[in-house]
Amino acid sequence: MRLFRWKAIVPLLLLGALVAGLWILFADRMAKGTTESVGTTLVGAKVEIDRMHLDVAHSRVEVRGLTVASPFEPLENLLQADLLVADLEPLPLLEKKLVIDRLAATGLRFGTPRQSDGRTVGQSDGVMGQVERWGQQLQVPALQLATGKISLDRLDPAQLNTPRLATALAAQADSSRTAWVSGLDALGTQAAVDSSARMVERLKGAKLTDVKLLGDARRTLEQVKRTEERLTALERSVTSGMATLQASAAGLAEARQRDYALARGLLKLPGLDAPDIGAALFGRAAVQRFQRALYWAQLARRYMPPGLLPRATPGPRRVRRAGTTVHFPRSNEPPAFLLKSADLSLSVASRGYSARLTGVTSDPALYGRPAEARGTAPGFRLAALLDHVRATPRDTAAASLADVALPSLRLPALGARLEPGAGVVGFRFVMQGDQVQARWTVTSDRVRWVRDSAGGRSSIGDVVWRAISGISTLEVSARLAGDLDHPELAVGSNLDRAIADRLRAMAGTELAAAERRVRAQVDSLTDGPMSAARSKVAALGGEVTGRLGGQRAQLDQARRALEQRLPGLRLP
Image (cartoon, rainbow, N blue to C red; front, side, top):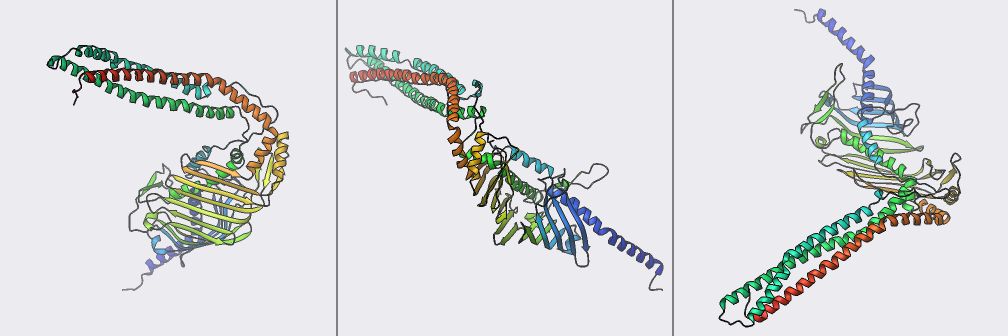
């Protein structure tokens, strides 16, 4: 018996050599293509890798020349990295799970230019579409500077709320009057008073032994008191109804104030309030920052979902329909993907910084700990926490960067471009469940203004230019708070008051006259309905109250007259 069967061993050796050769030739390429495809799907923009090497002997992966395009800007990269080295745990690979024990990234750069548009249409497109629609609902006013005489058109009464509310109030007063008058008539007060008067006359000559007469008197007194009780109930109803009508009448003044603002907006008069100017100048830039933060938070919730609910992902590509793969995570098993720790060496504005990332996983509930990111350096601070362990996810992020070159900002409404120079940028974002709070701040004391030669010149534009060109500091603060579906945006800056004061100083007379004409038009359309409604409410109050008081007095007099004739009579 031979120990080695060379006829069988030689083919096995040849097969092993063939597999090894194929691995050497194609493994890195296949891994590179798969990584680019998965990364592109996750980010929503092209992910490109110059070279990727799988070191099976040391359970290590090296990625050189990583480029991730920005999903927001067409000719800009989100980040570039010179080298990424990942140390893998080999055993989870046998279960088709990827656990990265340590990742080292060097040469990270952000916001670098690129030659072609890196945005793609894929699975992330749904999140991008949601974020864009979310940003569109945030109302950012437009700053329109008046040039020349302000003309006014006639207002359409259908556009105003006050006439409609006044007409409804008048109709409500009429219906209330009808109901209350019917209630007064139904009381039968006069019949009860007349019956009481006749009974008093009969009792004048009555004797104590006249039992039938005393019984009739007792029933008459009961009738009077029941009428008084119904009158009291009607009085309470009238008091409550009149309070509602009077409150509605008082609310007409507030409605007219809203109509003033509505008419002012319809006529496109330039808003000169400082908050409006701040929102018009920097509102769109603030919304873009908040949109980007929300985009990454929503992607994190999609690919790092809370809880152990089944998760559907697109199936592998096939000739026919790809279908959907549904993952059912089980407790007490390792997550499908886990990055235990990552050390990042990054460059911002030609300065080097370091940061650390831990606990990034596709199954936070299985891992049991939130993902964290931290980075500190002189003038640099970064902290983020993605807590998807519980059923209600909480995402928080805060960052500040000092003495960094700020990007220029075009202000078409002012016909100028703002060059902030070096300054401090701060950002904070908190989203718990469907509640969001965010703040973006920019501070600089090296501001430079550049006149936009392409824009048209105007007298007010010249005044605004003189107002802002002498300002060397910039302080911008934008806040976002509330429900994620309908948050409130507030933007302010140190430029608001300066521009508003200069504009009011020059155009104040004409704008004040235009505002008076607007108010006069609104008044002409609202005074009549308001006066009619208020008159009806006032007249109704006097009429119904007077009739109630008169009937109350008649019933009181009738009851006292009966009780005086029957001093010992008391109803239970």
